[in-house]
Image 1 (cartoon, protein in one colour):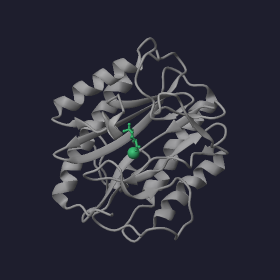
Image 2 (image 1 turned 120 degrees about the horizontal axis):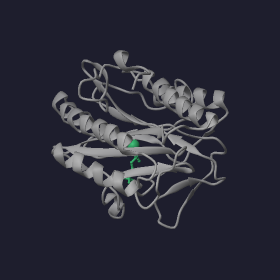
Image 3 (image 1 turned 135 degrees about the horizontal axis):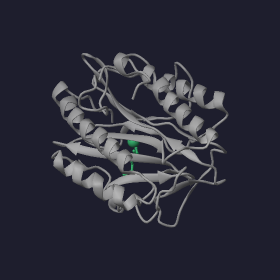
Image 4 (image 1 turned 180 degrees about the vertical axis):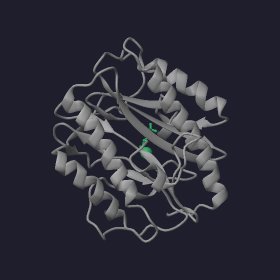
Length: 263
Ligand code: MF3
Ligand code: CO
């Protein structure tokens, strides 16, 4: 079911989005060599609670044990915070979801711990650029396939593995709503977007193939070939006042035009 949000619903999602952006900033600042992903999780909980929000991920599907996902290196998504100790050169994705008055926001950033190898730094830049290419395709009347095609074009150009098994999604009172938003597709195909919808656009690219595997913990998604992976995500709303990126910092304009490529 597609849910149509009212401006007051988007205002709640924006409050959740500010919280998510602050968790990203704080975890990034804290992510130095020697710090464990569990410590990042503990920091995240403090910030989420200080905002009067609830973590979206904890207990998801009855079993997710973390409050954020921390996915280093060959982990694509859904890395459970734990005893992985960060080392210089790690590429880590921090994925955060928060709920404010019943409404969710969900976003992920990837960054290097210290200096990244050149090919890994390019993977990170290109995955982020693919996310913005997808976001730039959002407007009332556009199709879900327009987003996928825009993301895929960047991935193909870089020769990356483009993950197909995990996709972006609608968002609102649930973290995962319709429609699914794949990171591949054809322009002009798929569901038409309209005002009142909110979607998460979240490309996942690898330096190798697109095949995935899930570890015995039943959550951690890794590349089948061990290649390193990258993940970026924002929550984007089609409001009556235009397309807004809800998961940017409090003092950043949410207008799409002000944000393209910057955050
Ligand atoms: N951003 C992720 C997603 O869109 C969050 C899910 S993590 C989970 O799927 F632990 F909650 F599953
Ligand atoms: Co998501």
